[in-house]
Each structure stands twice: as C-alpha cells, then as structure tokens.
Length: 437
Image 1 (tube, rainbow, N blue to C red):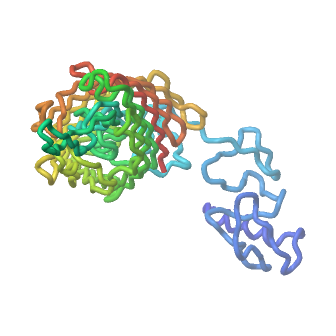
Image 2: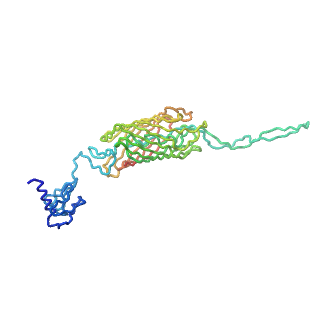
Image 3: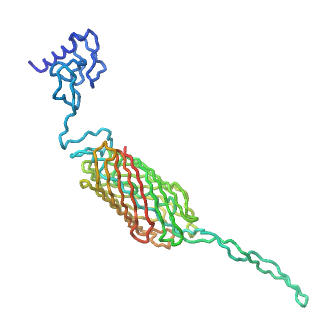
C-alpha cells in the first residue's frame, strides 16, 4: 500500500470519526492555525504543511509537525507530544533573533562576530590655536587727564597766559597677546572622534574634557579647559557597504577673561564606502569624506584686528580594519582642507589595537570588555609658526581605554595624553556611548 494512501486514510478517520458532528469546527493543534479550520464529512481538513487534528486525538505514530522541534523519545501516541529543541551540531550557526545589522552574522564557532569585529576610535584632537589680544585687567596709572590755563603777571606788569597739563590717576586696561583655541573651531571634526572605518547603523553621544589647553604656549596666563559634548547618527546604505551620518558638537571653553565662550560647534556630514567588506572575517578597506560646515557663531578678532577665519572643511580619508582572532587593528589616514587659506591644512594618521579580554554570547547583560590603545599623529602643513595668527604644532597623542559591550550598545572610557612638545593640552578624559540599531 502506498504511503499516500495511508495518509489519506488517516485524514479521513481524523475528520469523520464519532468525536465530531457534521459542521462542528476542528480546533488546530497547538502552534498551527488556519483561517478556515472547519471540516465537513467526506472532506479533508485544512492543511498547513502537516495534518491538523483535534486536541488530544492523534492516530498512533502521528504527531503534529512543529517547525524547528522533534518529538521527544518518550512521546505517547494519542497524546500531545513533548517537544525538545533540535540539538545544535558544534560549529553550526546560532539563531539570530533580534539582530538586524547586516554585519550581525553568526560565525563558524558560534557567537555574533558581526557586531563585535571592532570598536570605534576614542579620538584625541582638541583644536587649533589663534593669536588674539586679550584684556587681562586694569591698573592705576598717573596720566595727563587734561590741561588748564595758567596766567602770570611779570614785574613789568605784563600778563602772560600759558597752558599747563593736568595729571591724575587713571584706570588703564591691560592686554596680552596669547595663543588660545576658539570655541567651535576645528573641534569634534575628526573622523577618528568616536568613529571608525566601518559603515554601521548607530546613534552616539561623546563627551571630551581637555585640561590645560595651550598652557605651554601661554605661561602664567591661567588654566584653560574645554568641555565638548557631541551627538550624531549614522545609517548604512547600499546593503551595508556604505553609510551617511551627521554629528554636532556643543563646546564650553573656560579660562581667563576674554577666553571663555559657550557655543554650538560646526555641523559635520560624514560619508563612508567599503571597497572590501568581509562579513565573515570583519576585515574592511574603506574611504570616505567628512564635510564640516561653518555653522558655529563668530569667533571674534585676531591680534591684527581681522576676524577669526571660519572655513568649510573637506576631510577625505582612507581606513582599514583587520581582525586577528580576539584582537583587531585599525587605521585611518585623513587630510583636512579648509576653504580659507588662513586656516590650517591638517594631516592625520591614527592607529589602534584592541583585544577582547572578555566575550560572552548575546543575552548576557555584559557581552564584552575590550582594552584599546591608540596613537594619533597630527601634522599641520601650514601655520607652523607660533608667531603666526593661527598656529598648530606637530602632535603625537596617545589614547588608551576600555570598551564595555552590551547587547546593542557600547560604553567607552578613555584617557588621552600628548607626548610631543610643546604640549597642546595636559590631559583629556573621554566617555563615549554608541547604540546600534
């Protein structure tokens, strides 16, 4: 007897047995639903990939088919079977529920390597310096405050009138020529500020604190500090091989009189394209462009009376990511080109290494801890003289920190220190938060 004949007989018994009156609805088994789950005598029941039976009624040896599970060995014919997950053969991928990133592909050894190939750079750059004349205070000075007419009569009776000066104590403002940053200029613009060469879907927030900005350039002036908060987003396009994003910094500059200022910084638009985008290994070779628009407020005047330059900045870059088991290396080279010739053309080269000290399967609260170390080399191609109206020295900055990975987010903490003199600042503290969608 053929297998199809047996199946038809079983269906007929199930749908026309004494347990059902004519026209009585048939309730699908658990996990199987149909919009027309009724059976008429002599007709076959609704079929959705497997037979449908009333609760508790299963012909011997026949069980409802539930995708992804198999009947337990102790299943009893005629009763709802106990089902257990199909065992996973070692080396086969894990399920990927809830992961929408095109890079969240399971690896051959299990785990979601696509979301954890590498972390973003933490960053380093604090801005450039401008030569300005600051009013540092007032002092009392004895100066001529006017004149008066003095009349004298000689012995011969001749009258003589002369004009004599009048002196007094006067409050006089004191000034000093200094090299200081300007809030909103060249701040939060680098592709390595809480970013990487990999296109991704993310919202992010960054906080940077700089202590002692320009102290080595202005001895005795007083401490200058900068707080910067940056918000931004990035969205992949072209199947995850490219992305577009925007970021906006908020800058609070504090220091002696004439230095401090709070402003919304310049808005940047970012583009990325990955020429090599290996989703299995995580290796990347990409290029992109950052365009920074002069949206911040005016920066005042320079020492010669001219306005502080405020350019559109074009920053093309190339970068790579190379994974090595639990470790990874990444690098980015960029050049910032201003539209105003008085501004600084800045060459940047950054290199970072990271290692997954701890890594867990998704579902844990904390899924990874990654120590990182970064080297940033900043080379100005102009404005290299400290006596110029704009000045930027060669910089070698070291940034080191820890990245704490959660299911869809990363919290990063880092400290940056310049190691080449004159030091542009004393120390930088960094906190970044990235949420991936």
